[in-house]
Picture 1: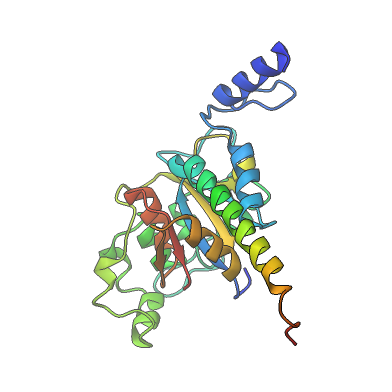
Picture 2: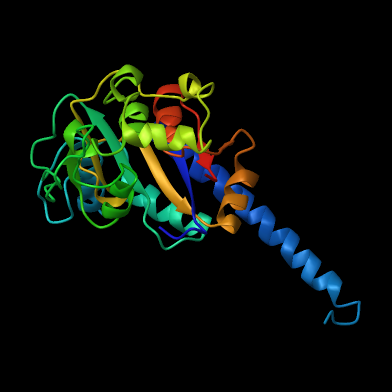
Length: 47
Length: 212
């Protein structure tokens, strides 16, 4: 295991709910990233 | 969807059988599907593993049988240097382990309920982590442990688990941990010793990540 890796233990009985929450959060992350990327275009490129 | 697909899915969900009709052991979830969704949503290509505690090794599951080195003066030996090595070994195959296989690592034996603090307290690896201050004696009794001694612990890819697991273990990068933390506000962020997060998930129903 790489020393840049960490570990996460999830109760198996909760996995379906956990995955649904991650998928929902991922959608929100993409939406915000898309908004930010579009908004950035109003400014000069950052070096 | 055809009737055949519906029936096949039902059989697989109830009995855990494969696509070509073989029947393995009972599972109650589509673990292969959940494994794929977990990897996709977190953004990892490292397969999550299933960890299952049981009274005895499950039928039809191979025992982990790597050789053990000669024991140290305190009697420690095992089939791997530490129990967390089983996390690495089980990303592509399923195997069962017994207490002796974990015996080289006193901390892992403690957190997984395989030995008591009294049994491991005098071992040289415990002395080493205490003497250098990696762990202090005041926190040792507070380390979460599996409370019922298991007869076997089975490891393997979640996607092919033949039995319903107790804990799903995922290796993550910093970015992937951020995704998890974002989605799970109650995610417990832990440090050392690391393997205690398995006990937290199993005994307390808590999703826990370790940065240790």
